Length: 473
Image (cartoon, rainbow, N blue to C red; front, top):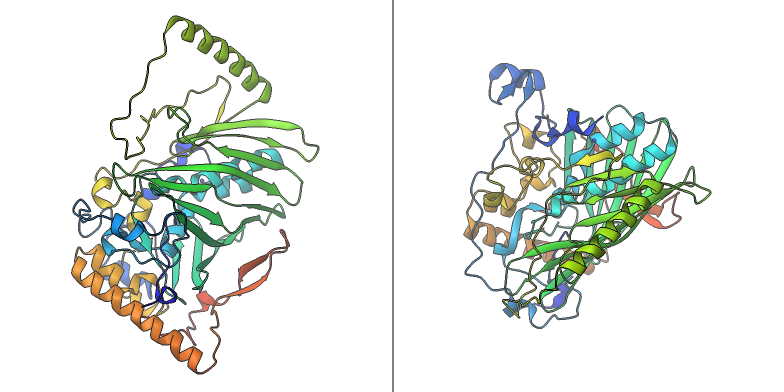
């Protein structure tokens, strides 16, 4: 089996905060044949007339303690991992298409941005949404399944006011395209993601290639940005831990406003771990506010002058403390591992700050469920009647992911191998017949805001006319 036959390994890969916190636990309705009939026959749990979603996976996470990834990765140092197959034990029971759907967990922030009358205030909330979109990656060290070419995923969340469709539009390079829209026609959110991975001996780094676009239709505004870098440390030995770093620039193409966010690397002593800091400037390049917090916890906004005054006072206080305390030497307990810095869970709030976003709490048994959030737990849930409505290419119908979710690792491995072989055979058949792959729901065109090539939704998915869908499972 040559490298061209291998599959891509992806590591990844919203009113007031108080009133909307915990929306990930709220129930919702996926597309089903007859909502009213299901309410009556009692086959699906109901809570106050709204469908109740599951709060746990069918089986606990499989232990990875007896497996080593070194034998696979030792020949890949400094190389891109786009064609390396990993044992299924290092996966989590979600497709990468479902993983990027987690961008929508804090959709209430989009609705909040739509409700703001001032463009600077809208930018602050959009910045909070951009940060919240990567918050679910905290402690998510399992990799999602590689989407098969032509694989799709749909999600309708009536309680959160959106629906989403995504498709794996390319295999080499692997590209996932998604399109979400407000049920009240208030926003569009779309993008195409090509995470490029490299192994550096102790860590795996994901470069987030691809542009994300958010359109607030009421205000006729479009915002674009790219996600920060993501790094998983200690893939060979030691405790796995994740950091995100790099500069994220959010541009309002209608007003000229800009937000620059710096996701800080943890640094030598870990003081900057998970920290995000940046500012919003208007079209005249005047700083209008400073944004700070942690992508794992919360995000705040404060006046620039107040921020600078607080920082000067803080530096003076730090200098006084250093005079009183001698520096202590730090000794690494394990020279082979990158020690995870001690996480300080509290962001020091500057007086006069405004809370933009706070992360929702995870399930109490999250560690036994691949560190999933409440939102993630629901993404692969199946229900009676769903197969008759979903496209035949939907992730929920993948037998390898379903087997892993149910705790049957042997069956999951067998199905994964079968699906890989089926895809290889289909690719060889197309090559034999000189046939080009044709995407079903997206097309490669020019993004009107960035001028760059992008995969945009062509429409029609929710008409439920699934003709010409490939047989991939």
